[in-house]
Picture 1: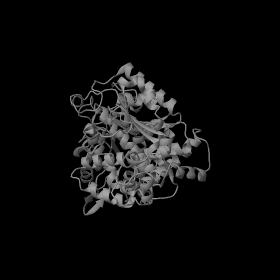
Picture 2 (picture 1 turned 135 degrees about the horizontal axis):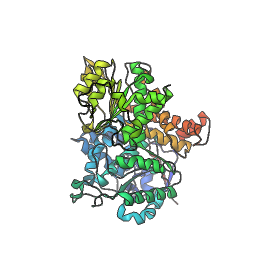
Picture 3 (picture 1 turned 90 degrees about the horizontal axis):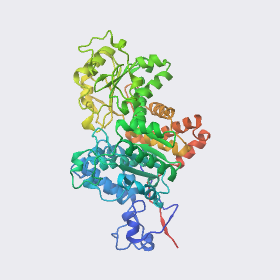
Amino acid sequence: MSRPPTSSLADPRLVGWSGIELINQPLLNKGTAFTEAERDAFHLHGLLPPHVGTLEKQVERRLKALRGFASDFQRYAFLRDLQDINETLFYALLVEHIDELLPLVYTPTVGEGCQRFSEIWRRPRGLFLSYPNRHRMRDILANPRFDKVRVIVVSDGERVLGLGDQGAGGMGIPIGKLSLYSACAGIHPEQTLPILLDVGTDNDERLNDPLYIGWHHERVRGADYDAFIDEFVSAVAERWPQVLLQWEDFAQANAAHLLQRYRDHLCTFNDDIQGTAAVAAGALLAAVHATGVRLSEQRIVIAGAGSAGCGIASLLLRAMREAGLSQSQAHRRLYAVDRFGLLLDGMSLTEAQCPFVQTRDVIADWTLPNPREVGLLDVIVNARPTALIGVCGQPGAFNEAAIRSMAAQVERPIIFALSNPTSRCEATAEQLITWTQGRGVIGTGSPFPSIQWQGQPVAIAQTNNSYIFPGIGLGVLASGARRINDAMFMAAARALAALSPAASNRNARLLPSVHELRAVSIAVAAAVARQAQDDGLAAPCDDASLAQRIQASIWQPVYRSYLAHA
């Protein structure tokens, strides 16, 4: 990715703020980069040191300060403060150093950020819509400063990554996700709005913490919860009829239900279900090039049959059908394993899990120590999978016996340990490389450094949703798509796979470098927009016009010159 454009004095902006009020506007503040003329016009002399700086030097100064902290959590808190003080500088720093800063503004550090959110909350960002204020919801959303909003990420904080219920601390997730919409896809920050639906928490540690900033009440559930969500969606659709609403980190019991309930009422998707599915499918399609085993010949095991696992299973079945398999053939090649073992008929399952059940006759000739509980190792030994995808949030779920068994049966096993944060990963990258004797094609949800195997570095693909959701948002906004369907996520997955370095070199990295995320998002956006047009969800236009619309939607973090209102 190229450096952010230099500070620009073109396209001056009329500004009505002055003095300390101007400096306190995060999207307008330029710190020491206010020019002498601007300091005259906006009465800034004395409020700033006399030095007149540049955005480039400010990035250099903030990066030096960032690297001076002792822990990633301290770096996370520093970046959150910077975002709330000077957004242009924050994004210029993030865009230029995305590979270094992505793990700080999002996974894995955002997990601790959510757990300790109450410690570091200082300035308002986004909206906390609490259950006691449900009757004020429309008035809160009506504030004119939200007029330009086009993308909302919303969470109720009940299932933050693999860390469980964090209540109001879950706001760290919408803030982090929207930071990546702006950094990776160029969505203007003033068009984004993070929202936390505070319906209480069942986390006793939060409820007993006098510093906890959320509503000190157990979680509202059942009909009252559904009514609150329905009121929220109605208010959002009324306020912003063309908005893109992303659901994030809702508990499994609610995630699929809410998506199905509202996906035909407004432009909406669930990143845990659909975004995770798309990045897993894209990485698997890329791995096909690396292994030489066609998708129609893959045997896939998914460890974790929650919302993410079911989303992945659904999209992979679609991909296998598109690769030429019948529905039954594709189904026979995919095995979903939950905490009670392989999903089999006769088990008590959720509605979302039912499409991925195997019949008992499938395991009739398997060698099983306990036929009533078919665990992950049993599935690996008997089904001989070529690909193993983990989204169970259980550290150690991919143990040495299971991985060595898989590697003994497959020349180049594909293994994606996708659970976040790092503390919840099914296995470390080093373990997976060691247990597969360097032959594994490895992807992880959180970043891991390259692993040395027999003196050679092995790149680990960070199979993270940041490769998908920013491009989805950019494609939707640029095309004016009215809805988001599953075909658009399949198009996103294929666009990501097409960018794989492994497509031309089987020994190259599986996914593009994180440093290339803006280019990835543009490619994903184009594929998503074309699919929306093909499916009648967006007005048609030629490729050249679409490319222009995508570029016109991309904001660059540069300083503009200001003119005072007459």
